[in-house]
Length: 168
Image (cartoon, rainbow, N blue to C red; front, side):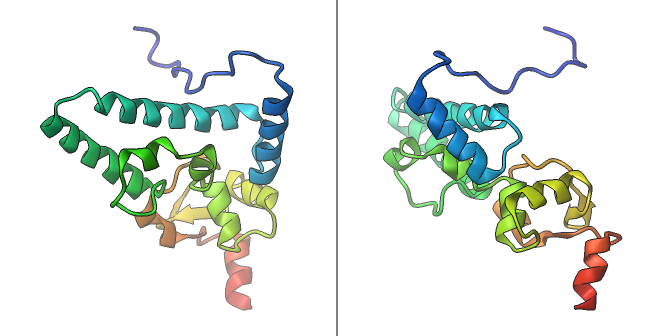
Protein backbone atom coordinates (compact mmCIF):
# COMPACT_ATOMS: atom_id res chain seq x y z
CA UNK A 1 0.00 0.00 0.00
CA UNK A 2 2.75 2.46 0.77
CA UNK A 3 3.23 5.23 3.25
CA UNK A 4 0.25 7.65 3.21
CA UNK A 5 2.59 10.58 3.88
CA UNK A 6 4.46 9.95 0.64
CA UNK A 7 2.38 10.80 -2.41
CA UNK A 8 2.45 8.60 -5.46
CA UNK A 9 4.31 9.71 -8.54
CA UNK A 10 1.96 11.61 -10.86
CA UNK A 11 4.11 11.34 -13.97
CA UNK A 12 5.94 8.95 -16.23
CA UNK A 13 9.15 10.01 -17.89
CA UNK A 14 9.66 9.25 -21.59
CA UNK A 15 10.75 5.75 -22.47
CA UNK A 16 13.73 6.78 -24.55
CA UNK A 17 15.60 9.76 -23.08
CA UNK A 18 17.56 11.11 -26.07
CA UNK A 19 15.26 11.59 -29.05
CA UNK A 20 16.23 14.97 -30.49
CA UNK A 21 12.84 15.91 -31.95
CA UNK A 22 11.06 15.13 -28.65
CA UNK A 23 13.66 17.08 -26.66
CA UNK A 24 13.22 20.12 -28.90
CA UNK A 25 9.42 19.91 -28.67
CA UNK A 26 9.59 19.60 -24.88
CA UNK A 27 11.92 22.59 -24.55
CA UNK A 28 9.61 24.67 -26.73
CA UNK A 29 6.58 23.78 -24.57
CA UNK A 30 8.52 24.44 -21.35
CA UNK A 31 9.48 27.89 -22.66
CA UNK A 32 6.04 28.79 -24.06
CA UNK A 33 4.14 27.82 -20.91
CA UNK A 34 6.77 28.96 -18.38
CA UNK A 35 7.14 25.56 -16.75
CA UNK A 36 9.77 25.10 -14.05
CA UNK A 37 11.08 21.84 -15.45
CA UNK A 38 10.13 19.00 -17.76
CA UNK A 39 8.50 17.11 -14.91
CA UNK A 40 5.59 19.57 -15.04
CA UNK A 41 5.23 18.82 -18.74
CA UNK A 42 5.39 15.08 -18.08
CA UNK A 43 2.60 15.43 -15.49
CA UNK A 44 0.36 17.00 -18.17
CA UNK A 45 1.36 14.35 -20.72
CA UNK A 46 0.59 11.57 -18.24
CA UNK A 47 -2.83 13.07 -17.48
CA UNK A 48 -3.56 13.27 -21.20
CA UNK A 49 -2.37 9.68 -21.68
CA UNK A 50 -4.76 8.50 -18.94
CA UNK A 51 -7.68 10.40 -20.50
CA UNK A 52 -7.02 8.88 -23.91
CA UNK A 53 -6.61 5.41 -22.39
CA UNK A 54 -9.98 5.77 -20.65
CA UNK A 55 -11.60 6.86 -23.93
CA UNK A 56 -10.12 3.89 -25.81
CA UNK A 57 -11.25 1.48 -23.10
CA UNK A 58 -14.83 2.70 -23.60
CA UNK A 59 -14.84 1.18 -27.08
CA UNK A 60 -14.79 -2.34 -25.65
CA UNK A 61 -17.86 -1.84 -23.44
CA UNK A 62 -21.50 -2.60 -24.22
CA UNK A 63 -23.32 0.25 -25.93
CA UNK A 64 -25.48 1.29 -22.93
CA UNK A 65 -22.55 1.32 -20.50
CA UNK A 66 -20.33 3.00 -23.10
CA UNK A 67 -22.77 5.88 -23.58
CA UNK A 68 -23.13 6.38 -19.84
CA UNK A 69 -19.39 6.44 -19.16
CA UNK A 70 -18.67 8.48 -22.29
CA UNK A 71 -21.07 11.18 -21.11
CA UNK A 72 -19.35 11.20 -17.71
CA UNK A 73 -15.92 11.56 -19.32
CA UNK A 74 -17.08 14.34 -21.65
CA UNK A 75 -18.77 16.20 -18.77
CA UNK A 76 -15.61 15.96 -16.68
CA UNK A 77 -13.38 17.19 -19.52
CA UNK A 78 -15.82 19.99 -20.37
CA UNK A 79 -16.01 21.15 -16.74
CA UNK A 80 -12.21 21.20 -16.60
CA UNK A 81 -12.19 23.28 -19.78
CA UNK A 82 -10.19 20.75 -21.78
CA UNK A 83 -13.08 20.29 -24.23
CA UNK A 84 -14.76 23.38 -25.70
CA UNK A 85 -18.25 21.86 -25.97
CA UNK A 86 -20.17 18.86 -24.72
CA UNK A 87 -21.18 17.80 -28.23
CA UNK A 88 -18.11 15.78 -29.17
CA UNK A 89 -17.34 12.27 -30.25
CA UNK A 90 -14.59 9.93 -29.14
CA UNK A 91 -12.25 11.07 -31.93
CA UNK A 92 -12.21 14.59 -30.47
CA UNK A 93 -11.04 13.19 -27.13
CA UNK A 94 -8.42 11.00 -28.79
CA UNK A 95 -7.25 14.02 -30.81
CA UNK A 96 -6.50 16.17 -27.76
CA UNK A 97 -2.99 17.54 -27.38
CA UNK A 98 -0.97 18.39 -24.29
CA UNK A 99 -1.50 22.09 -25.02
CA UNK A 100 -5.19 21.68 -24.11
CA UNK A 101 -4.15 20.70 -20.59
CA UNK A 102 -1.35 23.26 -20.30
CA UNK A 103 -3.82 26.01 -21.27
CA UNK A 104 -5.95 25.18 -18.23
CA UNK A 105 -3.13 25.65 -15.70
CA UNK A 106 -3.56 28.56 -13.30
CA UNK A 107 -0.24 30.04 -14.43
CA UNK A 108 -1.39 30.25 -18.05
CA UNK A 109 -4.80 31.66 -17.16
CA UNK A 110 -3.33 34.38 -14.92
CA UNK A 111 -1.11 35.48 -17.80
CA UNK A 112 -3.95 35.35 -20.35
CA UNK A 113 -6.25 37.40 -18.08
CA UNK A 114 -3.61 40.13 -18.00
CA UNK A 115 -2.89 39.93 -14.27
CA UNK A 116 0.79 39.37 -15.12
CA UNK A 117 2.94 40.87 -17.86
CA UNK A 118 4.74 37.61 -18.68
CA UNK A 119 4.04 33.95 -18.07
CA UNK A 120 7.07 33.82 -15.79
CA UNK A 121 5.72 36.70 -13.71
CA UNK A 122 2.41 34.84 -13.48
CA UNK A 123 4.22 31.89 -11.91
CA UNK A 124 5.97 34.17 -9.44
CA UNK A 125 2.74 35.92 -8.44
CA UNK A 126 1.07 32.57 -7.79
CA UNK A 127 3.95 31.08 -5.79
CA UNK A 128 4.28 34.24 -3.69
CA UNK A 129 0.59 34.14 -2.80
CA UNK A 130 -0.74 37.14 -4.72
CA UNK A 131 -3.36 35.17 -6.70
CA UNK A 132 -6.68 33.93 -5.33
CA UNK A 133 -9.66 32.03 -6.69
CA UNK A 134 -12.98 32.99 -5.08
CA UNK A 135 -11.02 34.85 -2.40
CA UNK A 136 -8.92 31.80 -1.43
CA UNK A 137 -5.18 31.98 -1.99
CA UNK A 138 -3.84 29.40 -4.44
CA UNK A 139 -0.06 28.89 -4.51
CA UNK A 140 0.17 26.07 -7.04
CA UNK A 141 0.88 27.22 -10.62
CA UNK A 142 -0.04 23.76 -11.93
CA UNK A 143 -3.58 23.87 -10.55
CA UNK A 144 -6.05 22.93 -13.30
CA UNK A 145 -8.76 25.58 -13.15
CA UNK A 146 -12.32 24.39 -13.84
CA UNK A 147 -14.53 26.48 -16.11
CA UNK A 148 -16.77 27.66 -13.26
CA UNK A 149 -13.81 29.02 -11.24
CA UNK A 150 -12.16 30.85 -14.14
CA UNK A 151 -14.04 34.18 -13.75
CA UNK A 152 -13.05 34.33 -10.06
CA UNK A 153 -9.29 34.43 -10.65
CA UNK A 154 -8.01 37.71 -9.22
CA UNK A 155 -5.46 39.15 -6.82
CA UNK A 156 -5.62 38.16 -3.17
CA UNK A 157 -7.43 40.96 -1.27
CA UNK A 158 -4.44 41.93 0.91
CA UNK A 159 -1.93 41.69 -1.94
CA UNK A 160 0.10 44.73 -2.91
CA UNK A 161 -1.00 44.18 -6.51
CA UNK A 162 -4.69 44.33 -5.54
CA UNK A 163 -4.21 47.78 -4.04
CA UNK A 164 -2.31 48.93 -7.15
CA UNK A 165 -5.14 47.68 -9.35
CA UNK A 166 -7.72 49.64 -7.32
CA UNK A 167 -5.61 52.82 -7.45
CA UNK A 168 -5.54 52.88 -11.26
